[in-house]
Length: 184
Image (cartoon, rainbow, N blue to C red; front, top):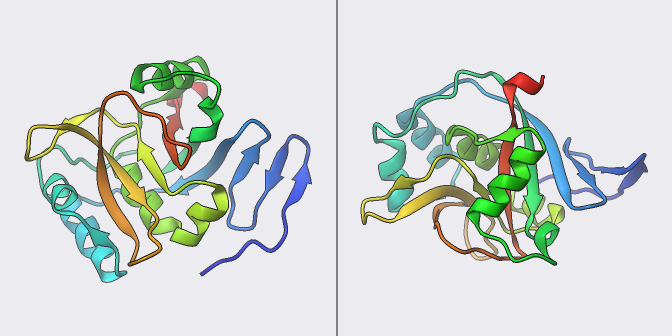
């Protein structure tokens, strides 16, 4: 388990030990490497590391919906729930904010990459308990539109679950996008 003992301020960013940067407005950026695994391999890999994966995520990882991302190096931007604190917002307004910054919807594999890279303690240190990866919504086995959401847990192992779409507002959540390839 990694712990950040010191935060160093550099320019307009606070730099933390595990390789993420947080702006003063509550936006976190980091790079993540991708090896392009299929859902079956991700399921095995995450379970081997003790991650609790709910039944909906298992079915999504093993479905035709799940495709490996072909991009190998991703620049990820995460809007903390507190970023939108003064505004009423929905999925549409969160996506509009991301697009205005040149960000795009990620592949759902980003949820697996984030769950593997960051510990629950990292999530808490970054200031949230879950990250909703803002990939294209998919239907779960109950027919609900969902997105994958790695989450921290104080009572068990790391959690990997889904989050239903609809009006959302949660100080303890965050929303992940990737930099549009055309912007790099």
